Image 1 (cartoon, rainbow, N blue to C red):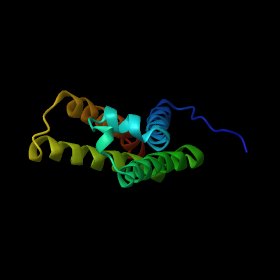
Image 2: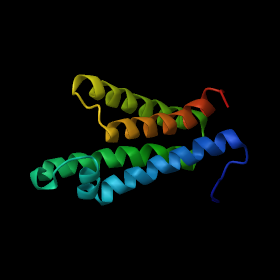
Image 3: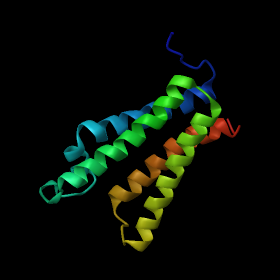
Length: 127
């Protein structure tokens, strides 16, 4: 089995967005304390349950894009895009409901929207 890298630009965009999400998931799984600090948490207050939840979320962010990278099917890219889209909706809700209008949330919201646009645009035929 050889590694597949897409030849068309729209699929390359979806592929690279999925790869970036996978790397973020790997980062969450391997370095949860650093990821939580970057997310604004004080690590001394995080319990082992919190680390477990962070690693578990990292597993989701690693496993789903990994399927998209390995199988290179439209519906996997769609799943990655929809997952990131709903994550962005959650962050958008946090901006208004949790008074989370801070630079970090805005930057991460834009990152989630940009990363969701690649797989969604490819799988829905916009690119």
